Each structure stands twice: as structure tokens, then as C-alpha cells.
Length: 79
Image (cartoon, rainbow, N blue to C red; front, side):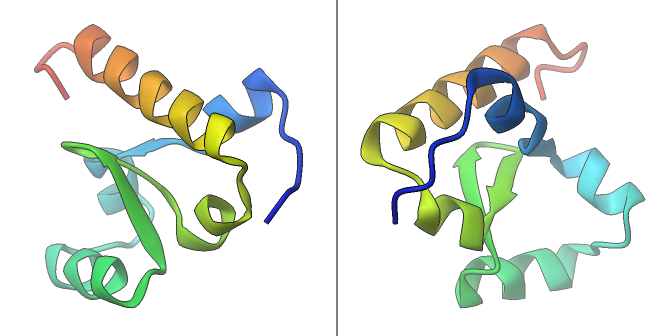
């Protein structure tokens, strides 16, 4: 743990469920990825790579969660 990411680079790593589906994830692979820690759910419908999540400081994890909540609020369908 401990790599420092600036705001913008951290924000760019956050993906919505539709973004993941467009890049080859399927519902089943997403569930398996969550179970294995390959991907981490930040907020309903918003995710970040599991290895990146493990590399973040607690403050950066909180910031990633905030980014996901804000993105969810701005998305047309609420996601």
C-alpha cells in the first residue's frame, strides 16, 4: 500500500458498470471479479481495479468513494 495518485489520475480509474460491460466484463465475470478482489465496488454501479484499491492510502480510498458518489449523481440514469 502507499502509491500516491493525484486527483485526476485517481478519478480516471473509476469505472461505471456500463463502462465495464463495454470493455468485456459480463455480469458473471463482474461477480467473480468482486469475490476474488480483481475489482472493488466503490458505490452502487461504480468500480475500481482491485489491485489499485489495495495500493491506495485510506484517504485516497475515501476520495475514490467520493468520486464514485459524485459520478453516480451526475449520470443520467443515476449510475
